[in-house]
Length: 75
Image 1 (tube, rainbow, N blue to C red):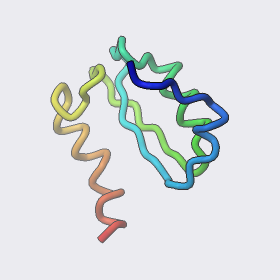
Image 2 (image 1 turned 135 degrees about the vertical axis):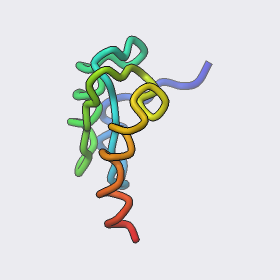
Image 3 (image 1 turned 180 degrees about the vertical axis):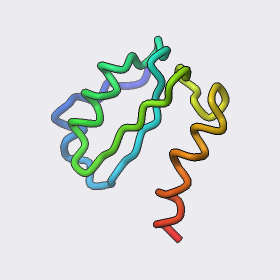
Image 4 (image 1 turned 90 degrees about the horizontal axis):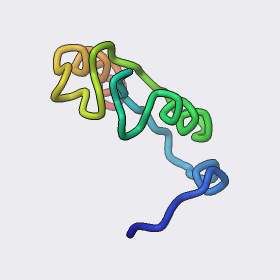
């Protein structure tokens, strides 16, 4: 079993993060995704309607639209 990461450890991560989640996600429910995003400095969470744990598969068009601006900024 993988070691659990605490909220305190998450808060020390130095990388910016972006998460895409769906309201139908039962593995990482929306409230958990919001909590994780809140613990990561500079993070962003996008909720995609109708998606669950795999928004890139379950809502591919909405996922592409959500990540396109971020990828454009990266070059």
